[in-house]
Length: 305
Image (tube, rainbow, N blue to C red):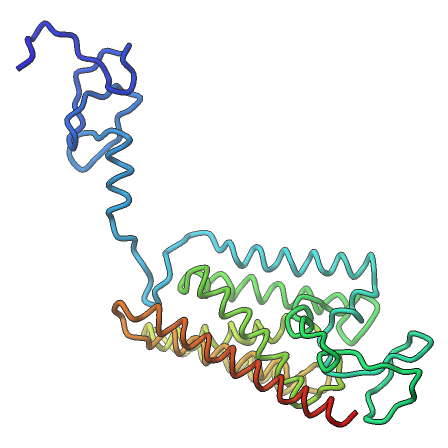
């Protein structure tokens, strides 16, 4: 027992007199080192140690709870940055848009694909080894002076990404949400490759349709009032049909199906230690299916050259 006359000081600041003990380690702490606890105060080290031992709360789908939809912000930023790049250098569109197969002539112009072509021409697109187009096309949009929508193309997609993405990311967590987005974008590009390989496409619509499917699946899993959700989904499907004349319905449908598949795995994976493994495994299986399908189509196209 220390004599009462002994001066006690903070264990971190030896020059500061202190008479308060940490309720966990019982060392003396000064006002600068005091951290509010359920009972009394704790020192900074005990607070950090306690935080490491506390199990972090997670959503129904296994994602870490976060109030800031950081991935959505980053995705919007990347789309906008790519759009600025298009304005500065329009050739970016031809170089990185989704294209299964096409031809470039000796004059540098792009031509519709045909199996037999003169020696002065050369093939371009995924079938020519440009596999990156399967994803880069999902970050490009129509220039202001081209297409039916012009600048409305990116505006509509980014507003949709802002509205849906924040909700989905909050429920899934950042890692699962990013995997969903990229697989939906890839699913849209692969269906374009399978059904319309000679049709150049671009835009985040496939990924956004995937988020729309995720929104519906999550609402069902959470037992939400489906009336409003079904109205949203009906509008999405109606737009899928109406936009077929002006946009790539294959990209929209591919993103929708891929997003639904991923979210079903997220939503109905066992809620125990196997959940993350099952969810990751489902994403890996879908990725393999998409890549094998793309490879088979490319083999078919290149075999006809």
